[in-house]
Structure formats: structure tokens, C-alpha cells
Image 1: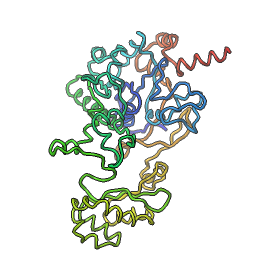
Image 2: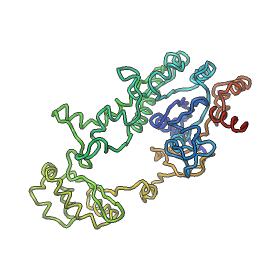
Image 3: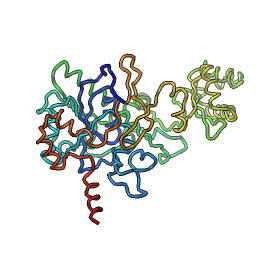
Image 4: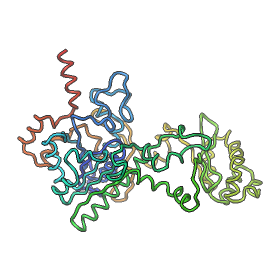
Length: 441
């Protein structure tokens, strides 16, 4: 893997990445995919369980986010964790301890050489580390900084911690996700708030950079992920504001179109998703089922009537699909102009003929994790600057010397002092100490 001979859209942009879990790393990987030099700042003293997984995995113990290749943590599990190897692509890694003055000073020096600083820790973390916006903006007035905490930097919930499930719950999404005859305990964890937050965070950064290009001034972005994901519920919010209705769970049905559902087909737990938006598609579906009588039945004329008789329609469609292949019906209905798609199990997705034809997957070899197949960048089909995974996710601290010496301008002596003080390294301190104790035993 190597970078292309054409200039990438964000080439020349330098980003400090101090993100965790999924939302923040996803935001920065969108930037690194586009060519930005994204430098992850990591600590040897404080293992980041939620991003790189645990520093030490006991025999039979739980793995990190996404697990490990062949379920083997290896000697350096933090470099094999699937959650990181996917969102760490095209990035660099530098280590420093921000709980000590020398680490804070190094970080400020790094900020002076960068355009963007992104973090999605709990509110107050960067303040306690001495790298708040007030501090960094004085060191670099052109810096753009975004804090993507769960609930933002102000308000009653400011100091509350949150993952995707918490943010989705507080804005009303969780109770919309499920089946009408089930309670919230059956709600499937989706955590789309993370990907949504990462995407909008990257967009906000680019907007702030455009403002900087016009004015020469950086700015601080306080982005609450909960507020962001609230915008994905606009239809339910509008229905309540305009009609006083509180939307409940719909299962696989649509609030306005009918029929819509997921119907069992022949095979091992095979299903087909079908949506009918208007009378023309309803007529086409009835034709495919060889039931023209349904198309002319007044009980099924129009979406409103079909919604009222949705249960009866579901039985009819379910009886028709039950002994047929989902693949055959998918093509048959699409050819007839009816939106339909097979419901893939996750194991089906890598082998889908369309996704393969589009080149959705790319094989990547990592120093510690081996060769595996990963999703390519989300916006890779750019006519002049197509995107790829240019570099695998970095081993922790792999770029220490480059970042300290070339980016921050440390002399050899200054760099060696950081090494001697324990800021610079490639394994967590707790792991090093455990190995030293084991060797003495």
C-alpha cells in the first residue's frame, strides 16, 4: 500500500486525534481517508480500553471492541483489536503522557504545528489535562478544535458520560425502535449515533476550516452527539409538534406507506424486505403475485386503506414468499418496479455480487494483526481523487520519532529526554512492568 501520485482532497491538512470508542475515530478516519495527516495522541500510562481494547487480556478473558484475529490477543493486543484496526487506517500514532507537565508542553507544541484538534472525551477531560481551548487557541490562533462529548460542554447533563445507547435513548430514538407488541428490553442496540456524530463532526471541521481560510481565525466547536442524533427523528418530532401524536414502535412498517415489511422466504432463515409507496407499486406487486384482484379491491385502494388492512396484506404476501427464493423475488420485484431487497446476514454481505463489483472491500496487511479484508473509504468513488486505504492502522507509538522530530521540531536530545521520561514507547507501562515482574519470578 502506498499513497497515490495525485493530490488527495485534504492533503496538507494536519489533525490531532485524541478520540475514543467509535464516533471520534470514525470522524478522523473520514479525514485521513481524504488525505489529511491524522496523528493519534496516545498514552502509555492509561490504556484506552474502548478504542484499542485491554492492555492485558487474561486467558479466556473478553476481547476488545470487535475482538481479535482468530480470537488470539497476541503479545500486543492493542495492535490487533479489530475496532481499532478498522478505524485507525491512514493514521499515525505518537505517545505522550498528558498528566505530566512535559507531556502537556509537548502537546501544545504539537498543536502549534497542526490545523485541527478533535476529541470526544467526556466534558472537562481536556481542561483537566491542561489542553483546553483557551490554552490551545493562544498557542495557535488558527487552530480549529472540536469537542464531541455526549451532551455538550454546557447544560445540566454536561458532566454525564454517554455511549451511543445513552444518547439515542435521551433524544427519544430507543422507544421508536422495536415491535409494537414488545417492550424496550427487546430493542436492538444499533449505536448509529456514533457514525452519525462522526460524519457531522468531520463536516463541521471542514466548515470551520473554510471560515479560517476566509478570516485567518480558528474556532471552537461544541458538538453534542445527542443533539446531533436528535435530527434523525424529524418526522416523529414534527408529528408530535403538529398533531400531538406520540409515535410508537412500528416494527418493520412505515408511518405512511403500505405495505412495508420483511417476509420469510424458502431457505435457512431467509427474508425479503418489500416496500410499496403508491398505487402503481401496489398494482405491480399484485401482478408479481398473480393476484390482480387485490389491485382492484377497494379495501386496498390507497396507502391509508392498505395501512388499515396491513395485517391481512402481510399474511397474503407472506404466503406468497414462503416457498420462493429471496434472490429470485428480489430481482423479480425490482424488475417490476417494486422496491425490494434480500435481508442479508452479516456473513452474506462480503459476498454480495453488487458490493463485490463496486469494490467495497480491500485487503490490508497489518504488522501485528495480519492480512484481513476491510471496508474501503465511504466516499471512495471520486472521479479525480479516488480513495483507498493507503496505510494500515498504526501500531501504538509507531510514528513517535517522526512526530516529535519532524512535526514538533524536537532535537535529538529533547526527544531522548522524552524517551527516558517514559513518554515515548510502543507498549503500555502496565504491560512492561508485568513482563519485568514475570522475568524476575
